Image (cartoon, rainbow, N blue to C red; front, side, top):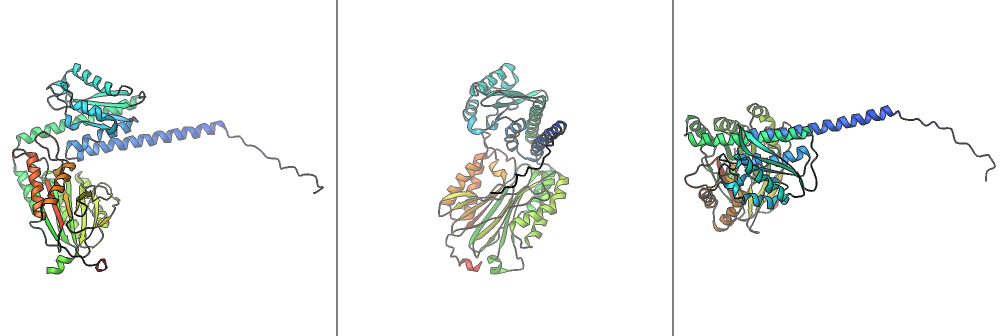
Length: 467
């Protein structure tokens, strides 16, 4: 034990932080938070405006509205009830989030007898009846409702709700909701005008020129790829669209059997928009894409480079492109693929008798200069069937106004793949089903293109070491 006296700790000075500095930092944090919220809201509104000017069918736009508006004002749920031109509730276009909470409400709206009558949406008393139906189904929720009005006509109702409590509103929230309602009413009005024009116009000179352009860049026959069958068809709509599919050898210098055994690129895409401009843009992209194929790069890199090449031209045209690109090696049956926001192809697995989607992350071509794309890979088996298609197939309207839809396409692909022996037979049966659904006297709204790629049933594989 030491006899030295204990050492006293050095004196310390406690510095107090001025309250004014703390308040200033709090103010800065508040301003940063408000700024971030404002940017987020601007992004949401911009995404809705982008969808309005870019989507070629109304359904894809309307399904975004409840999602965007609920996030915009910070509520848990939203319901969109659009009206037909004659004031009836447009039951096929009802949209709601979250869907699991609104199933019973949507069912009752679909069965709502008053909403089937012409002029329903033009009578204030009947709108009150609609509001009461919504309120009864969301009895514990705080609800806010507003009308969709275009050119003085009621085009629908938009509801926002919090399931378990009241809604806290500010003037900014109200303005944001009304802005979304106004954008939505414009979309409904535009669709009505387009339908009216379509019903009165014939096949004019522009459409004839567009059809000629489109016919020139689609292959007139399918190539022979060893161990596979390939069939493709584009069913033009009344208005020419920007559908595109193509097949290219990655080494075009090869000939004969060597070309058949070499790697092939298979692609399908769609320009957002219709008419001659869409056809011209797809022709331009076709040239760029064919040059990229010769580079031998993997699919994700090809889409990345194509996006950078085409971004400026597409931005100036205010159009964008969806594109699914894949390459196939007959020696190994390996298919590599990348997707620029196109409809994912459907793969029927012969051994499992089941269907899956082939998809990879990626943005539209022309949307963002530095966009990155994912790359997927799969080994196809004997008898497998791969269906590439454009949204003109799934968005095709039936006699009742219902869309053909992906679920129906999956069912028909499963049936055709089980019962048909060849790619051409499968393709013919799928188009037969589509034509029967649309009706012989009705017109497609958009080009409908399908490509069927089938692995032969009797294919004998070499080992993977030959890859």
